[in-house]
Length: 140
Image 1 (cartoon, rainbow, N blue to C red):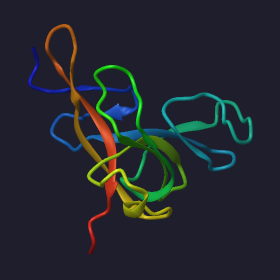
Image 2 (tube, one colour):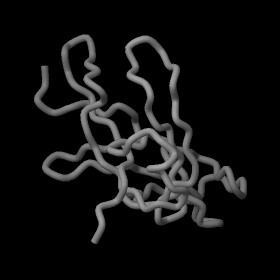
Image 3 (cartoon, one colour):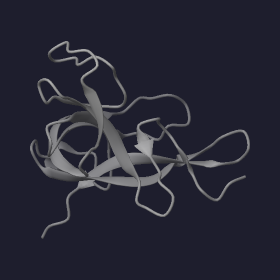
Image 4 (cartoon, rainbow, N blue to C red):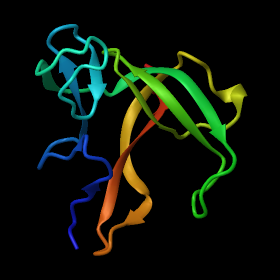
């Protein structure tokens, strides 16, 4: 068993001695950015123009759904969200640290990406996973 958590998804990077981050791929032809690895741009179709980039940890809530029914073992309700990061990348994840009530959630509300334990999940060897979530951005 390792003290260092495992990344829950391949595009979550956990560098030794540094903060975790999300990795995307940016098209050198049109500038579109996507979460995760790809060889072809989904926007313009360019091939072999993609390069890795570190995605920003801030953005705005684009859309959300409050989930009331899920797989056994998944606590409900929870908020499934799509966020437009500050660089324009759209990513999906769960919005945490806010009551799952539309009164508390506003479209375009500033959010930040946070990294935390992946809901207590462990692999067969007992290693914990690290995942990413969104939360309302701290007021300045």
